[in-house]
Length: 256
Image (cartoon, rainbow, N blue to C red):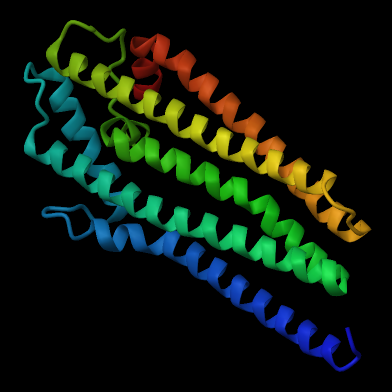
């Protein structure tokens, strides 16, 4: 590389990092603001999460005290609202994962070429944020699959006693509990496999053809983060599988 080419590549790397950072910030902003905006289009939608929380208690209490397994209209509106809310977050977090992966890859490549402590820090942070965004993606898949259960932590409508599994409303919620935890088992398992795949690819690349110290360091960072993420996702899947084995207790815990 000539002295003339080095500043040009360095400038391009800084520009790429700036664009990646802007994309990440835009994703975070979308994660915070977009779900309420889109879910607000649901007919009869409450006024944001606070409105959903205020409306949920009376609607859920009436449902649990009744005998119809079908959600009444006011509760169904809240369930639809919460499903759309988390579905939007799936789209946003999936985009964040892709942006962070691309940012980490590009920034590590720039650091391997020209070095720089700031570039290495950005690459490390971007790499570490990938599994965080992945976890957000996984839990939002779970909440979208069974929004009725994802809503329960917002409610203060605790039954105050052991739930009666034979009652139709409770039986319906127990079915949703199974969907809720099974979806997390599956989503977390997929995320664990993806992380394990990243570990394998990085290890193979690191053991491949002769590489410089910087490239080995970059690949080593990917191995450490991806291996930690795989272990975390396996733990999440295991915990949800345990909850799946006792849906009555899981529902009791969700209701408080």
